[in-house]
Structure formats: C-alpha cells, structure tokens
Amino acid sequence: MKKNIGKIIFIIFIILAVFMGKKYIDNKTFDYTEIVTNSLSSYFVSGSTNELKPIIELLEKYRKDEQMVYNIQTYSFEIVGSWYLYLDDKYYCDKNNLNSCKAQLEEFKTLSTRLNDLYNYKSSNNYTIILPSAYSNLKSEGEKKITALNKIVASPSSKNPYTSEEIRQRRCESAIDCENCRDGICKCYYITEDKTRDSVMCVKESQ
Image (cartoon, rainbow, N blue to C red):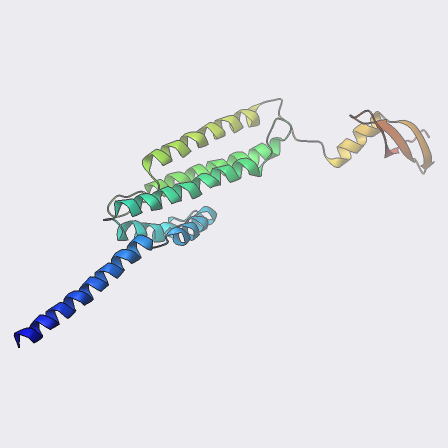
C-alpha cells in the first residue's frame, strides 16, 4: 500500500514538474511584439487609451518578471519613437512651404498629447508603457520640434510655394520671342534657372 502511495506521489510530482516547466518556458518564450504593435498602432490612429489595455494587461500579467516588463517597455518605446521619425519625414517644411509647416506643427502637437496620455495610462502596479527616461527624451525632442516649427509659421518671411498658374504667369512676364499667336495666345520662350531655353503658353494681347 505504501509503495502505491509513493508511486502516486511520484507521478503527481512529475506531472506538476512538467506543468510548471511548461508554464515557465511559455512565459520566457512568449512573443509580446504582435500585441504591443497592434495596440500602439490602433492608439496612434484613434488616440483612445482603451486601445492600450492589451499592453497594460501584459504588464500586469508579467509583473513578477522584471526582464519581461522591461522588454515590453523598451519595445513600446521603439514603436512610439518611430512615430516621431515618421512625422519628421512626412513633410518638407521650410520658409517656402508654409502650409506644410502648419500641417506638421498640428500633427506634432497631437503626437505630444498622445505621448502624455500614453505615459499617464499605467497598470495597477504603476508600471508605465514606456520607461520614464524614454518618455523624457521623446517629450524633449517633441518640444524642440514644435518650437522650431512655431518659429517658421510665425515668421513674416514664410510663404507658400507658387501655384502652377502663378509659375506660368511669372514665366510669361519674363518671356521673349513669342510666336504662333492665335486669339491672343502665343508660344513664348523664357530662360530657366539652369540657363536653358524653354517654352510657355502666354496671353499676349498686343500680338
């Protein structure tokens, strides 16, 4: 009888060891990247912190595994950081592209709000989605970008590029050697910035 009890206890021990070992391996090899990526992508579009719940749930689930929590926070930072690079490359902004600068400025302001809301949305054990140091760096870089854009937008010398019609009219003003006129419309020639000769259709009432 004692031998049977010993065998049962041994079998139970083996089953528990296998179960605990599997659970440990599953935790260590769990791929959190898809959940984090999808959650942050949805949040970037909607701005609703409800989209961040899956990440918060991960942080709470793995609260006893500091390395896993750190990995989730670090990966989240990589994605959020890519948003800033995306907006930086999305627009060509200088003093000759005022509308582009205005649009970029508004998007960076929105992103700044997104960053603050994301950082303040914490787990029950006070874990943040990205580390405090990562938040500070992104916040600082975002503020620098907003300051730079505000200066361009506020500058009296900033302007929008010429429209195609404005460009045509400017070329006609400097055009020479008009020909083939019909009903006041002539084919005229002008010198490009590259010092080459090109043609443009112009209204020449005197022709």
